Image (cartoon, rainbow, N blue to C red):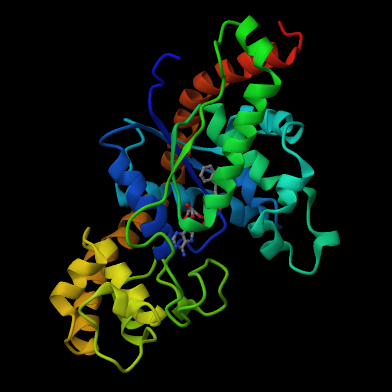
Length: 345
Ligand code: AMP
Ligand code: TRP
């Protein structure tokens, strides 16, 4: 097989309250990958509506995620930034993947089980099919690398399973249409670094999340410097000093989380942080973390606010990005229709 050009794709849902977990697990890494790869970053509004979204809020949140991307350093002229619903290929390919993926595979998805809870009969059909749409997002662009937080690992494994089954089921047609041995790449997840799973600042056993009722559980990207400092100061800890070795963080989820956050914000490692602060009082480390968090995150909120003041400029970025995404997506949809055996003009 010819060497496949590397391409990065990732998505963030416009469901409000972008937080430090989204930043360290995803957006900060999106920014870094711009130097080495062609990148496509998508505001996944079709995913958002798998649970109820107020229409006006959905628009506002879509623009807010776009503003956050740009405020954090994503360059929408060198790369592609757009919202999913503007490129119809996502929904089209998702349908085809709904016919490739097996019920049993989706039944195993832990995110669905968590989100549906006990109310399985009453959640949307879209929530069940969510991972199939996610596979379509990625494979529509034949993306080879997908940066995400730890919680998306299982969805990326499913994406590989769908690509693999499509390539096998349609092998003869793929070859007959001149695509050689496999049409879709087997995508690599990029889940790395010290903050792939940022935990709540109030409870080290719970993931930091958009929907936690306590605003003190997370640092929002829209928080100003005072709010950031206050939340770090109040973050739950234990009374012990920091250990000097990483192993000493094992049974201390809150300390582990804060060390991971410090490491990620300073582009270092947990061990590096412990080399500097291990053995010392927790309060000294916390004071340093307050300064670091304010320094790195403080400017983002201001820049987001500035960008949000001109929604037509944000919309223009999304429209332009969608037009460029569509060029790639349309080619995939034409190929897939030929492979599956759909008559087209
Ligand atoms: P979502 O807000 O669910 O669309 O997530 C957007 C991105 O942020 C995905 O790559 C998630 O894996 C990542 N993410 C969400 N929450 C966290 C967290 N607490 N820690 C690390 N990454 C996260
Ligand atoms: N499911 C992802 C999340 O909740 C968002 C997402 C949708 C995504 N499509 C994607 C992430 C494609 C990576 C690639 O975080």
